[in-house]
Length: 164
Image 1: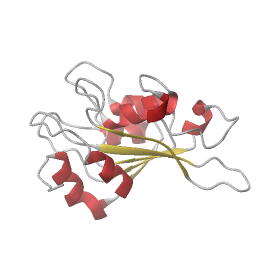
Image 2: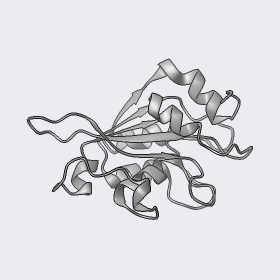
Image 3: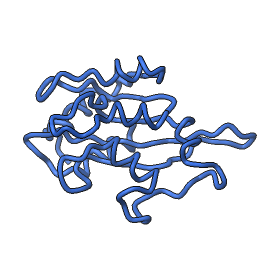
């Protein structure tokens, strides 16, 4: 979660959007496997109101980013689609369930990617929309873990009111 918080701090502050960080960690079951970072992302990395989880997924899949922005595949010979099914998502704020822009929600993107679990630092405050991202993930049989230890810090960064 600390890595996700570091990502969130990279966000350009915005009064109309939260600052969120996300890290994808793959743990493919082999005899010598250890959890390895697959990709990182933060809000507004790309032009427009892009979200952290979507950016991390795009990096993992090699879509829309330079190769230098992506983390190498830690398990050569295993397709990214397979790795994503063995991936834990660490995100500072609950993945969005609806996008006012009309883009696909982060919850829907994580469901489509088939990630295994999502560790969430804080529920999305109702500042902009009513979020039901965690519920959508649970309904899709993705394990959801609330990591409340960092809740206050996650909300502060999200609202751009924690000093950098």
